[in-house]
Image (cartoon, rainbow, N blue to C red; front, side, top):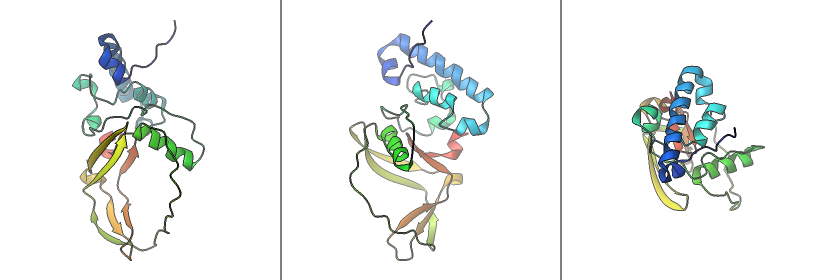
Length: 188
């Protein structure tokens, strides 16, 4: 018996049979993740179960029954890019950055030049908590605007350099993934 390839959201939309396979897989694996995976592995995007769920687009609610979609995903409506499930060996920080960019944006990373990053000051002015971020980008060839509202428990601190020319997000409990900014409290 040969293994069949994962069913992506695009394939599921075209075929009811493929959609049924995807729903069945996502329901089974989602249940296995909940029962058999510890907290550390459940949050690790590199774990085999999370990679399998990503390959099948199981974290995208379209075409799935509400009971098969985790609460965390409902609160993050950003759809995955066309390359979200892609993974490759990451050798260094440049390759890691290129991989994250490709999985988020859905297109190949290009070197556009070097950017001089000023040294991070040892002192900063804490202005307050960051409630949310509004940003624009291109994903899968489409110009998109996103608003991420941080949950109260996950908010970073807005810090400004003493000269007022650099802005920082310090602390907080979030990660930037192929779906954009994801609060850690959304993952549990």
